[in-house]
Image 1 (cartoon, helix red, strand yellow):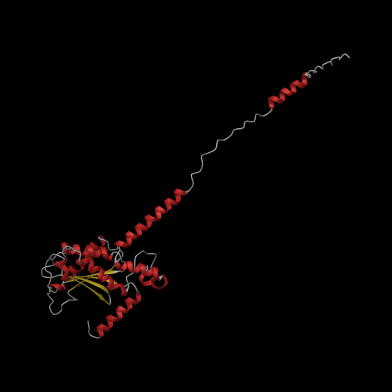
Image 2 (cartoon, one colour):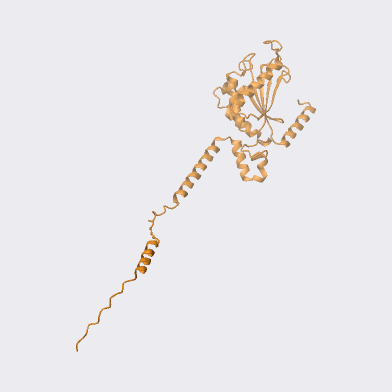
Amino acid sequence: MEVVPRPQLQRRPLPRQLRAENKLLDETRPIIVIKKKSGHAAHHGGAWKVAYADFVTAMMALFIVLWLLNISKPVREAIAGYFRDPAGTAGKLGTSTAGPGAQVVVAKDDMSKLKEELEKAISHMPNFDKLKDQIEITVTPEGLRIELLESATGTFFDLGSSTPNQNGKELLDLLAGELGKLPNKISIERHTDSKPYSGKRNYGNWELSTDRANAARRLMQQQGLGQTQVAQVRGFADQLLRKAENPFDPSNRRISLIVQYTDRGDAAEGRTAQAVDKVAGKQ
C-alpha cells in the first residue's frame, strides 16, 4: 500500500496592519529593570556598650571614694548619718534645708567635732609650735569661737598696720579653707588693747580694729571663705577686753572668728544661755 505524504500547510503571513500593531506594542511596553541589593555584613552586637557602662560606673565610684577620703571627719559623719536615717537626721546631719546644697550643716552637737578637726588642721602648720599658745578654740552659746591672740613676741598685724603679716596670712588662709567647706555664717571681730593709737590724725582704735577685721575678711574670702558666708564684720576697739584687769596686755589684741549655729533652735538656746549668764553675773 502506498503512503501518500501529507501536504504541509504553509503559514499564512499576517496582514500588514496586524504586524504594525504588534511592533507598536513592543515599542510602548515599559522596560522593567530588576536590581538585586547585596547583603550587609553581620551586626556586631551591643556587648561593647555593656563594657563601657561598667567602666563609667567604676570611674564614678572611684571619684566618689577619692572625694570621701579628702573631706573632713564631721562631713563624712554627717553624710553617713543622712543615709542611715534621711527622715530623722536630714535637718542636722544631712543637707541644709535651705536648698539642694551639697554642703553639710554643722549644728550645735557637731561644734565639738569641728573644733577637733580645726585643731588637727592647725597642728600641721610649719610654725605651729610658735603659735600654739596664741590660738584658742571654744564652743560658746553664740557658736564656735576661734580666738587668734597676739603676744609680746608674736603678732598677726604689724604695729599700726591694717594688713596681716606672714603669721596672720598663713593662719587665716588655713582657717578660710576649712571654714569655707561649711554653710554656716561667720562673724569676724577685731579687738585692740587700751593703748591709744597715735599713727594718724582722726584715726584711733575704733578705725584700726574695724580696718583689721575687714582686712581679715578680704583675705579669707580670697582663700576659700564664701562670698555670702560672712554675716558680720565688727571692730570693738578696747570695749571687750580679754583681760580687763590689765587693759594693756597684748592678748587683748585679737581676731575672733565665730562659726554661728545654723539651726534656729540652737541659736535661740544660745541667746537664752547668754542672758542667763549675764543675770547670774558670769559675764
